[in-house]
Image (cartoon, rainbow, N blue to C red; front, side):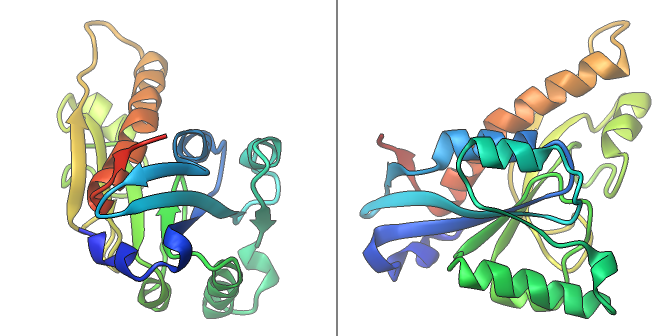
Length: 207
């Protein structure tokens, strides 16, 4: 899906930006699976997480990024007069970090068409899309007992509506609590997101 992105990379280095708003567990899983590793496609490609960025100054994920040695920037929308100013700041930071591709990992804001003009962007969502788009999808699918699982998709201006790259169903166990199910969903996300990215890029793990 994004194989053409790799053809003109300088030094065969793919630089990722990751946006998050909270705990950053998906961000950490992506870094641990992909950062500074070599993958095979038409040619060897090194993936580097160039920048993590959050819209929440108290997000626990900031400490995770720092511990993993990846630069992390905090940009709070309240500090900008208009949403468009905030979006331009996002674009500027990711551009300065020379990011080629952006991954949303628990980023609780919509990105604008302007943003998507600058960066191809992927997202992970805790339901089997098109079931339960938007916020509280995990709880909604759990309570409805349908559409439970995880989807990785291309981000478009329409909420949770872009082409799906990978999905995996995960059904609640009998009498399982929402807390237990949430933990299992997060564990599945951590496995599926890196795999889906490599699938979209046409890459296989090498080192």
